[in-house]
Picture 1 (cartoon, helix red, strand yellow):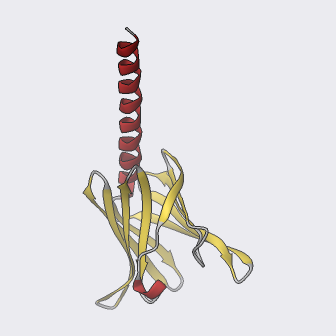
Picture 2: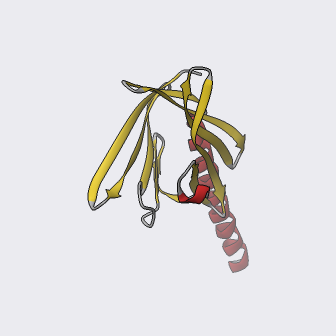
Length: 156
């Protein structure tokens, strides 16, 4: 009987862990699409595509005439039960990816952090509505706290 109870409890815990992992991945799918941030310097875009149940691929770029200038390529991937934001920024970090593990999430917010990175140390996405979000980077740069918010509208 004890073995049966332990088996049922173990199965329930495993099921909860799987449900949690699935909700983490599903919770990121609201990023899929093309987002635009308009500023006086021009428009910046971020495009996200669902690659698999465990991965989204993204890129940040600007359009200059007919040319696309890519700032960074991003992977949002779940591996070993950890959701990680992995940007590769042109001209930074020897063009190598940097890992920002998820530290906090809710239905409408994802917060990633890497305290060892120069700047930013924190990257977050907050869903305002189906077609509106705010991407934000924050941290310490040259001894000063810095924060940049990028309100974005879905265009695709």
